[in-house]
Amino acid sequence: MAFKRKVLGKTDYGRRLRLLKSKDRRFIVRITNKGIIAQIAEYSVNGDRILATITDKALSKYGIELRGNNLQICYLVGYAAGVEAQKAGVETAVLDIGRKKFRKGGRIAACLKGITDSGVDIPHGEDVFPDKKRLNGSHLKNPVKLNEAVKNFKKLEEKA
Image 1 (spheres, rainbow, N blue to C red):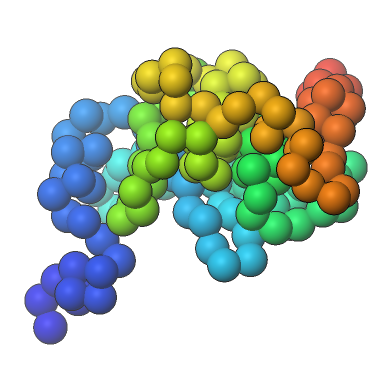
Image 2: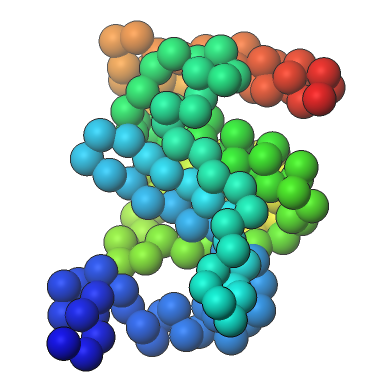
């Protein structure tokens, strides 16, 4: 079966080709039913080379024991991906969201805000990010204190 991933709805080859032609590193965001995966990848003839990977489960390394794919976790995964990307020498990237649609103020936008706040330059519009109240978790029963979490990232970054 030719282009099996296209038939299964997993890959948009037109979008992928445009991303690869840009020759920029890609910030890949995939939201699953139970979590989130963020990666920094660059194109290679032998296959994409992954420079950094962070999942919601990996946040425990930074002292955050929560899992899931809500806005706060998405922001923190993006921030952690930015920290790891900078360790790998990545300063700029383009957003790769696969077959998902980008929604203003959504989980992918929260992840994008996290990586841009960490210092990685990714082209975006200013009005796409979630509201600060939602990022701080005012709509959640048990919100993560983002200021403390970001301080944990910075402390661990200084130790390394």
